[in-house]
Image 1 (tube, rainbow, N blue to C red):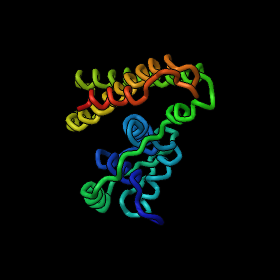
Image 2 (tube, rainbow, N blue to C red):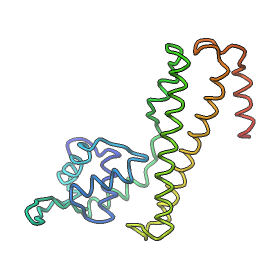
Image 3 (cartoon, rainbow, N blue to C red):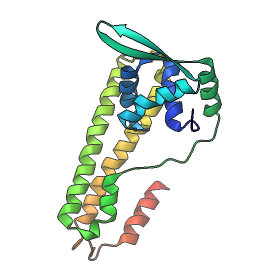
Image 4 (tube, helix red, strand yellow):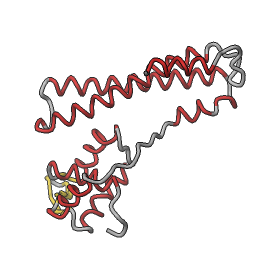
Length: 205
């Protein structure tokens, strides 16, 4: 591998440790599972397995299904050892990429209507994501899991994502209530920011 393995490299290795995948299957599975906490462009997901093969962590075998050609990737023993070693390393702090929050942060350059629309859209998107995750949870409870032997790990992760979306929904509702009291996005009028923050901190103690 020309450059050191990235977190995406290890994420793909983790999927390969579950089973062998064609390029298409690997990409779709990554989008189904990893996108909730490690979203990556589809092109990146197609390129990463090739880098793992170059590094000796995976193998690639050409396959033919009818008239369709595909490549099947499998993890090697070198890849399994490297994945196991990486799992023991300290994790980097979490990061958040959230365009809606960028718009909230700079809302004083726009109108209250724009801010309210942004907050409403944030809440609606979080609700949509919560509903999608909830349907996954129902499927899992019915035993409709592709990897039933890993259900304990899936449930722990699913609980985190559900709580995250629930928190975003609550925050969007709260922020909308606060902004409703403002005169403009540049003038909150009599709204007491310090009191609002003190209330939130007190609720969490």
